[in-house]
Image (cartoon, rainbow, N blue to C red):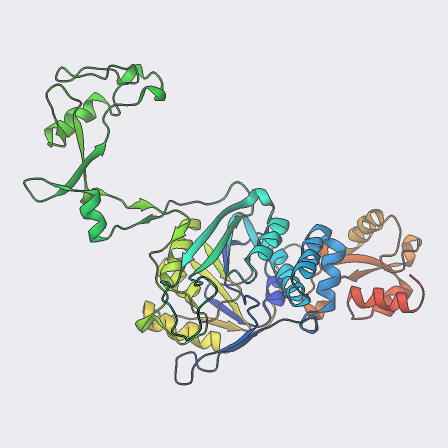
Length: 459
């Protein structure tokens, strides 16, 4: 990995993503702008004072190179974006173009065993789902998590509401491949839930239930090694007991079995041994950030939310990336869980918040590296001579600008995305242009070159 742990970048995340090594990140969580048509700022006097961002998008906000890059290299993805323009608006189109070029880079930097969690709300969630299907593949969709962030309190108004309250966000979980990290995450029961789930109390005051069966169901098939008799009791079906005879004797000695005359024995399961109920995709137990956790940063998410996501999809010492890290909740949660982390945010305030929150909430006083430069990928750079031959074969000797066939010696290697915009020397960013087209393009974008050639009547 070409970036060290505990690094926060203050720059456009697209440039930084293009500078990160491929297949280097274990988990990406992103909470991007939602295209909500609002402007956000932190209140004066809060820890995040000075942090602000615009969440209104027009085509003037979108680099023409992004538009052309997607249309040329990801036609299926571009069709999804075009459909959003027709069904929603040009604003949605520009927002999705902004997101698409970044998601393509996120897929590249993610390890084959990695996962990505995209946090959004109904403003653009269905359009973002189409983007994620196009970029990561519909077969790599894992979960749509519904997070209840509010409790449905009615707003005071003289006007009757004509819609239901918006109490939830959704988080789309995709993996890069079928071989992804998945750790079972459980939810602790409340005291009220414990009383219901474990209604009995033994002589020592331990709460238990008798819901766990001791016999296997007939549908589980024959299990001859678990077919035995104990205290005159056996399963009448060849599916047998659920535990070995040795284990059953041990449970009997510790009084973990209730024997009943003429009935099946019952097995005690204790509340103090319960590991928690497995988490589904409806998360109602995590409230919004409040109290001392609040920094005043707009759209701040609670640490408990990131804690659950990080535990589910990474192991100790693996790397977490948040490309819209804002007030650094992901960084703080990753540090607490002994994961490595990288954060990116265009606001200089993010760096300050990272350091402050790590000191306050984690007690971490180590070095946090703050950078505003674009990292250089450490992957092996191509042999340009070999690359030129490869590109010449792929393009069948045709200039990628004017579409005219030229001899090999008349072709020049060109960066599709200019280096000044974060373009790299890797094969996926290289093409061959004839000398005239290369001169016409200069340091501009591929989309600008095509526009100039059309103006000149070449295309």
